[in-house]
Length: 476
Figure 1 (cartoon, helix red, strand yellow):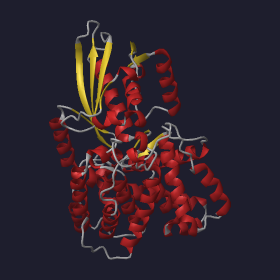
Figure 2 (cartoon, helix red, strand yellow):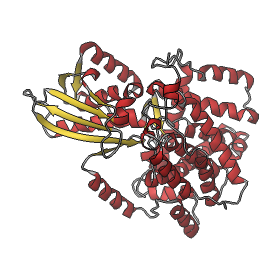
Figure 3 (tube, rainbow, N blue to C red):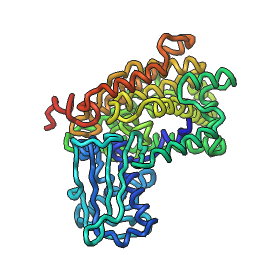
Figure 4 (tube, one colour):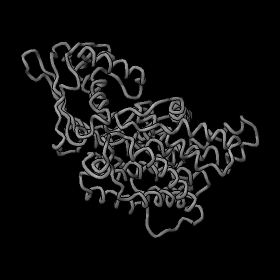
């Protein structure tokens, strides 16, 4: 184990971590290499080839425009939605790409989305989400070339650097006090040390950061989640993309404020649904979101975390002690919840995949539901065995979930699916808390099953928009 909680929860822009954030990061890395290796000034043209799932659903996922932004030097964690809109409008109007501008090394190139070469039916050997960048000189000769893969959750891997990445991962793993790649190893650390799952994860995180910094960064992640929800509630009009999907979160919010002004516990399902819908509608709008662990599943952890900070026994008890006490308890809940969820996310990255293009939506919504269930079980006072059981229940009932977005847009069925999966996570945590942690099927067995199910799943149902709802529902 050497994956940090901050690898799983990162700030980016919508609508997709693997199809928007990852390609932008890859293009940014290519632009950075052009500047570092003194190729920028001699670059007269570009060739960008986009393969497999990235190409098949690239329009709906904003892949091609994300690549343009990355080539201009924009970082998905730092770029603002208004910057995105301004730059894309300018590129469309002028046909000119400002290569490397955000890096301080601008070179104007006549290049737009129309110049990209699409290969929707060609899958490169490493991963279906492949892209190849070439910088060309004035005579058309290749100055330098790189091939990248977006492997889920915004993670990217450069072709030919797999051994180096594996060596770096092994070196990082050797540093942490409690390395784990399976749930059994994680539970073994808890048994031998007496630590909870969040405490094990915190001890490993301290390998790279001080405890105060870890806490502040986790609270920042929560703040971005809250800002994402709030931004969505202020928006109007249908979602972009051409399906004319109506936003529901703003109207639902107004209705809930009327019907539940005092936050009656009986209304928790409606508030959880609202948060999940709001976050994913903001993601579909290309807004600023937290990959948790992907953009397509970004609403599940915030929705369940909202439940934990508003409806858990600890939060409700603190509510009667004044705003300062409530704020302190909520902050503690956030830190412990995200550390626990992050530990479970590590298991999916280590043993399977969180990429819809690789294993279907079970790898995105399923893993997010599992992570959220574990986080909530921790806040409800669960033992390590109960937390692991909660994660197992949530994933077991997402096995086989396909990724077949209509029009390649992260809207139908993705937005509602987040709300359903958030409710599943809460139910899974409550079911686990009514048991003693013993159960017949282990989380490791479910994760392996998810991986194998993904391998057997037809490519039509893995983020290609070639099957399921994507072909059986008329778009207009």
